Amino acid sequence: MKKLAPFFISGLLLLGAAACNDPSRTTQSAPDTVNQNPASPAAQTTQEAKEDAQSELRRRQLNQDIRAREERNNLTGGDAQRAEADLASEVRSKLEANIPGGQLTVAADEQGTVTVNGTVNNQDQLSKIQPLAQEIKGVKNVVNKAVVAPPQ
Image 1 (cartoon, rainbow, N blue to C red):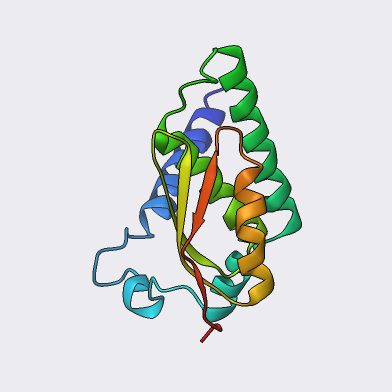
Image 2: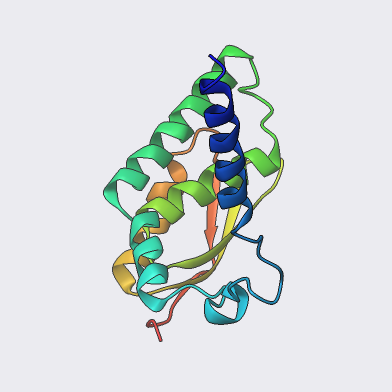
């Protein structure tokens, strides 16, 4: 036992000396990741995010969200009086999911009239606005002020 104690203590001292040999980094020796990797995303990353936002999966998710909102609205008896912001939000989600590349804004009033402004890429997308908006429960009238403007 007496021979083992000095061996154990010297092992601990040797281990401690080796551990202290690696000094901690300071701001001068740390890598400069801020200047090496700017925060702006690459063009490919931006394009992938845009494609994901307009994918079939995203479209189905938005449509399911809209149906869930309508079911909650039916359960709470809020069928007659819908909040204008809620109605506009549902129409906006529906249009975003089904009209890729459109730059649309949506406003609603208390009578259920929805006004859509902005631009779409082609005439086919423009003609989809009214039927899509009419699918949302509570929409009584659609005022379509959107215009066709090809993407730049």
